[in-house]
Each structure stands twice: as C-alpha cells, then as structure tokens.
Length: 258
Image (cartoon, rainbow, N blue to C red):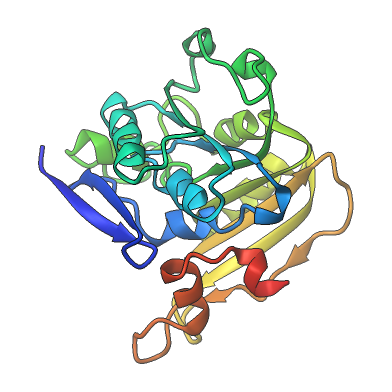
C-alpha cells in the first residue's frame, strides 16, 4: 500500500495516511474545532477515527485533552498511534481497535475515569460516520475506502445511538455529515439530546451546503438553533478568513464565534 504524509494546521501536524481510499481532509479539522479549550482537560472520543487526524488536531490546540479513538480497521488504528508519536502528541492519546457492532471488542478497554469503556462517558463525542447507505452507492474496490464510506453492520441511526450513549450528561456530540442526511441525524439524536445546533458548511456564498456539522448536548432540553454556518471559500476559490483561521491557524469554533 502507498502512503502520503500530509500537512495539517498550516503544516504544524504531519499526518501519514493511505494514498488511495479514505483520506482525512478539512472535515476532520472542522470537527476537531468544536471541542472547547475552556473545558480544562476535556475527555474526547472520536468514533471511527481513521489515522487519528481529528484527535491530533485537538491535542495540538488543547495539549491537556484526553483523546480516545475507535477504529475498526487495524491498519488505520496502528497508523493513528504512529502519527501521534511522530507529532509528539502520544500522551493522553489512546486508539482502540474495536468494531462498535461487537460489544466484546471493548472487554479490555478502559474509559477516561478508569471504568470499563462501555460503562464510562466522555465530555465530547465526535464522529464522521460513513457517508453512504449500503446499496445506495457504488462500493469502491479499495477496502479501506469502502469501509469508511459505506454503512455496513450499523446504519447511521445505530452508529449515532452508540455515540450518544458514550456522552456524559450535559456532554456534547458533534457530527459532520452530508447535508441531505440531516433529517436522519436529527431523528437519531433528538431523543436524548437537545440544544441542537446545525452549522452548514457552504463551499462559497453562492453554492448550497453539501456538508453540515450538527452539535447537541445530552439531557438538555433548551432551544435548538441554526447557525449562520461557515463559508469556506471566496468566489475566486481562495479560502475565506474564517476558513484560514480554522483550517490553517487551528483556532476553535468557539474562539471565532463567541
């Protein structure tokens, strides 16, 4: 397998990942930006962490964060650990090889308070679930890409149910996904979460959003909101000032909008 080493956060992070197949990009950095530095040493879980880009972006901005990742593909999980070492961010960074369809896969893992993983809970749970429903998209011949992009074993609702179950009361979930799956996301999380915030990701000011970030707070029933969203590029294709602050400078979402 061929690999590339790519720079993130203006080159501050070096991430090695497969040259073909599922590759981390701006979605990972945007998802990481949701975690608030003001929370002290937050515990964070990335469900479906790939090569660890989301978690390493968080550790770069909040070194004291305790980051955990779950990844079913052992090759990617191993590379996530290696990426942490290369970037000197391995302290407080734990990657577990685990299939979230199989509860027995977690038997030997502990959560942030030292309890059995499935009995513990996190301040933040982040996830970039597979984008396509099984049977509704052409499967890639690349196994890594196919597993990352197509729902198998768990559909989106079950994936999000697992994720919500890992959040502390008053903790936050953040999901980045296709805009046309928004109704499915809301249906999956609204039973146990409130204060839902929908953040459209506009490619530019004249193009419909194809991605959204949805955040929600567990056991919170206060009002929901629709954010102004993020415009990622100017009409000439150059990155907007906000995009630069998030993707290149590594600022948190709350640092910009609060």
